[in-house]
Length: 392
Image (cartoon, rainbow, N blue to C red):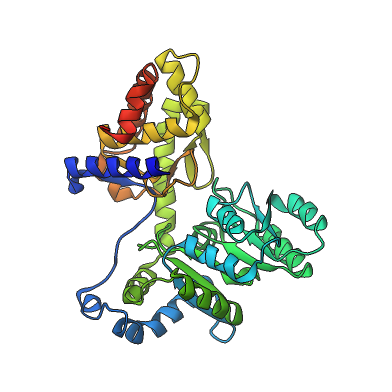
């Protein structure tokens, strides 16, 4: 909404006031532009692709587990662009699309299905997927998410069963492998994306071991990728070719070891957070989480408020604004527009950023102080509006 953007603009004003060098980026994402001076020399849409496309393709196929004789790649402006282009290409109004993950599909998947007029059914796990598939006479597309929004991971055996069942139904399998493309192989000994037998899929280059930018990297069956590529260029969803060098550099510098470093740092922070949050801290193998409902409940308890004056999503937004305003901590809430969800995710924390901030105990103290301050603000909800949107 318009207010989402106003909130983001207010966050930007805080960054300006504090100075960019004083901000600690704890989004769990990396949005840098890893280009060398030589890369910048040829950074235009005509020369850059001529110089970098072949190298980019080879690196991308290796990253995704593809082979040049069967697979091709495409780079999008965002992972959301890849997902939307896939639905625009393979789904007609009224077609059935089934989502499957360990919990629920990302909002971008649901929006893409809605945009093309599909009848979308979301499922959690193999058993629910089987039942959903059995109810349909025809399924156009299956949206498979390896690492869910909740950071729960589908088992490889379940993924292979889902792919087999989908193909038996005549469906194309698209995998939203946002962070799973690296977390699965690097930390859980899972196959690379295209080794899972899927038809086509995409990952985000800002997630977990890669350096950015926030592009969507697609790989898959050559014929299918060619069709999606055509649709992407038609609709303006492609990555600008002048930035192909950045894709080359981020893939060259990727290391699976970095993924585990980020997870290990997050686990250290979780230990400190648990001392403050107790059983309300939810942990997955890769993240620590404060659910939006719990966040609002804690703040109400601390503020002595018995009836919630705001909804959990607004409480999460206010909490994240307090972290930024009072502690210079920029969280993932300010990355999406709108954010993907209301739960607070502490994830893939860079050890060097945590050390510069002052360590995991200081991190936990900032969280604790922000929850207490939010509780105070709940007594006067108009102050929360000012906190989120600034002076209006």
